[in-house]
Structures are given as C-alpha cells and as structure tokens.
Image 1: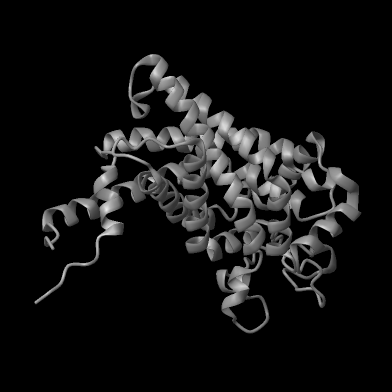
Image 2: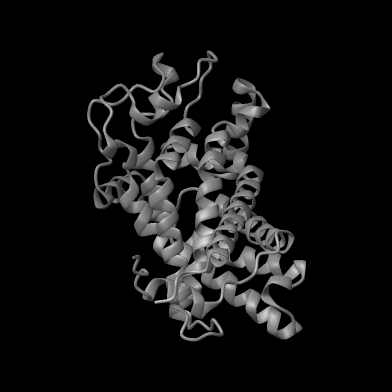
Length: 330
C-alpha cells in the first residue's frame, strides 16, 4: 500500500487546528455577548421563582447591586473555558462529519445525513467537554454577598469525595438534548444558508451578511424551542445542592437528599411545581439569546474560515482515511 504523504498529513493537521481555533473564537464571542441573559436564565431554571419580564429585570438589578455589573458575567470565564474547546470541536467535527456522511465526491448530503452530522458533532463536543459545562452552571447559580468565591474544585466536587462520575452528573439529559438540538441547529442553518447561496449564485461560505444572520437566528430559535425541557432537566441535575442559600447563612451547602436523580423523576418534580408551563420556564429568554448566539457564532465562524483560508476537505480523500487499513511497515 502507498505510504501516506507527509505533507498531506501535516496539511490535514493544520486544517483541523484552524477549524478548532476558528470555532472556539466564534463560540466564545457568542457566549460572552449573551452571558448576562444566560446567568439570569440559569437562576430561574434552578429555582421556583416566577419567570416574567419584571422579575428578570429585578433579578439582573439585584445581581448588579450585590456583585456589581461584572456580576452579570460571573462564571463567564468558566463558560469561555468550556465553550472554546466545545465550539471548536463542534464546528470542526460538523464539517468533517458532513464529508464522512456524504454519498459522493461533491459532498452532497441528504436531509437525514445533514441532521445526523449535526447531531454527531454536538454529541462529540459534549462528551469531550462536559465537566466544564458542569463547572460553569454551578458557578453561575452562586451568589456570594461576602465576596468569598466558590473555588473551581469545590464547585465540581462539593464537600464529598472526588469521583469521576460526579464530573458527569446530568450528562444523560444533556446528550439526549444535544442530539436533536445540534442536529436541528446545524441542519436548519446549513439548509437556509445553502438556499441563499444558490439563489444568490455564490458559495455557502460567501453568502452576504444578512443571509448568514437570518439563517443563524432561525436555526437558534427552532433548536432552542424544540429541546428546552431537557435543558431545564440538565440544569436542575447539574446545580442541585449548589443553589444560593444566603438566607440560611450558608453558601453552596449540599442537601442531605438529592431529589434530581433521574431524567423522568426530574421532569415529574418540575411538572409538580407548576404544570406544563414549568417545563418551559425561561424559554422566552432563550428566544432572545438563542438566535443572537447562533447569529454571532455561525457568522463569525464563516468569516474566520475565510480569514484563515480554510478550504472544504475533499470528500473522497477524507473517507479514504477511514476506510484504508494502516500501511505496513518493514
């Protein structure tokens, strides 16, 4: 068998690295832009507070009063720490999965293949970066009036013994949610942007700004709305025992009994708190921040690919890497 070309291997590694960096920057920009809304949403998701516009404004004002305006971005460093590799892996793997799933050298994908590529990309990113998402959620729900901050270690481990499985608490609803969420988001955006490219007779990478923004906003709106209850379950399971307990004089103390143990049980508990409306608590805020985040991330990733001169991988060459046996060595 033919020995692999050294330059080809190096070029592939450089290309993947560029995609990871471009995706990481795009995701970090988007998350930082919506961080105040994201933190406020998590506080409502993980409590029994009534969600409405007046209470959202009051909650944000209360955060500013107790922690200063920078408190709205509390936990954002952990968010960026998670989002940079997460978004980089997700965007990069989506491009690669598209080529892997395509039927021919042109890279054409059916709707199901495009949906599958998005779902696989989301699952890959979640599996590799989940402990960082757990850390970010637990830091976001803390409200330290005294100025003493919960350490990253305490946020991940609590006051119990360190266990690897504790780093993945809530991962099942996350995976169940990310499969349709990422699939729908990438499928919708890729399809709408592709339609715009064909109508305007240009490439999908070079569609005008308004087309990129519109396709990103629609994809975010649909994806967020269709998978929201599982996102709520994920937050409850991640943050249980880390909710602000300042009225008791304690910070971050864990409950003696954990009530959010299973997905079905958590859904039942949430439903018992407020009926079907409770399963969509905070969704209206997602209708604002979701489209904005997707607009920024997808658009930034396209422009960064142009800036970094990232070329689409050749479909046949990419599939060959997965199908050929490794070369024999003497």
